[in-house]
Image 1: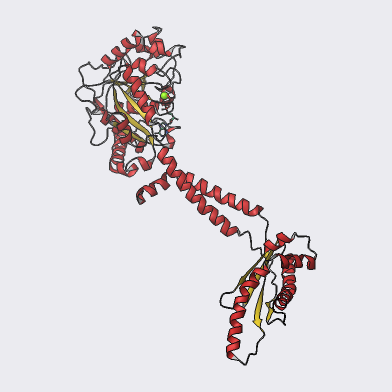
Image 2: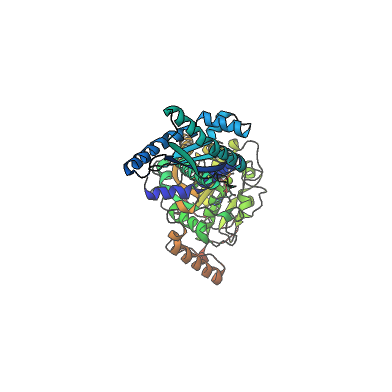
Length: 502
Ligand SMILES: Nc1ncnc2c1ncn2[C@@H]1O[C@H](COP(=O)(O)OP(=O)(O)OP(=O)(O)O)[C@@H](O)[C@H]1O
Ligand SMILES: [Mg+2]
């Protein structure tokens, strides 16, 4: 893993890493709080040999002897005999083995000093036990040495540091424990993040989508925009902001797909609900309308229609009424904005949407729209759960599949392609929606010049004529002032031979 991908991992999964780290820190803090506090009392013995100090050689040897003995005395300090003598002497109700485990001792290297320490739940009890050791241990050594040699003992054990008293517990150590917990949590969080990333098969880049679509291009990378829920389409028709800039790019890219075979009836579908089909298709229709392309948006989602809501149009009579011959197309088609986009909402929701959408009437309607408009956009329900997209697909020139960043899985997108292919609908391209800035490949700043320039031009257009103007560098067919005017039924219709103006 390179440093770059490591930093990318942290950036992508920082929430998981933080949660695991904080959790581990909290657990260790909880365990620390519940752990019994232990206090310690320490004391130091000095071991000396009784010799004639005027003789230097003897004094040296005696010192060496004492150093060797100190090692053995350390073991005696933690022995059963001393513990049992301490229990008897103090009258404490602690089992001898337990007391024994609470005494530790060590010889200070290269010296004749012997350190002992006692731990207990109470600092007073620890000191009391240490005091008992200070009282009992020298006598115990004296007896041992005396019995071994049969003469008076040459080794003398004296207390040089009396038992200490400390009200501060020696364990647990909250700082060390919580620090260790946080460090382990951080490592676990990083490991989990790496595992989650390697198991994550959701699509995040345009390249991944292209790969799954068998090399078909991604026409648009639409950034995630938190204002989209409250403002799914630009209310004023001005295509400003990074998301709208992306729709303008989508409009331009649309003109470049399969240029040898002009496609004008395009359906938009996706794998799952809420991938952003309706918002994408509404904004694309508006983007097309702003450059004068005669566009009709047909809402073929007869289960959860949203187009009317997003565009602020009533969804009274619509597609179903035309298909059931309860209304004429001219009477139910609505115009959004300043004559730029025609919209056929779903109409009354039927009990059998699949049958209606796959009917001969639907085919005839699409042919009529094909004759009247330069671009016909169909907003479909999700393709994995419902067969509606496949039913309508047979009458379309192709499908554009919306993939939702970080949610649509490669396998799901593949299944959508398979279901469309089985209905004979060519998949033309993809759109990657709700892309978080880090995966946008340059993000907002990558769009910088075009965005601000476009915004300026549009403001200018709005100031001069109250109209939105197309952005710089786009394939514009005609100025808005010359756009065909007219209401449903009398607007200038394009012939089939007219190429779409994108
Ligand atoms: N680029 C975006 N950034 C943030 N939110 C978005 C974006 N695109 C769409 N959304 C939001 O996602 C939600 C679903 O969008 P939309 O209705 O377009 O999805 P859909 O695929 O048509 O759903 P359905 O399958 O139900 O028809 C909406 O609240 C919409 O505002
Ligand atoms: Mg929808």
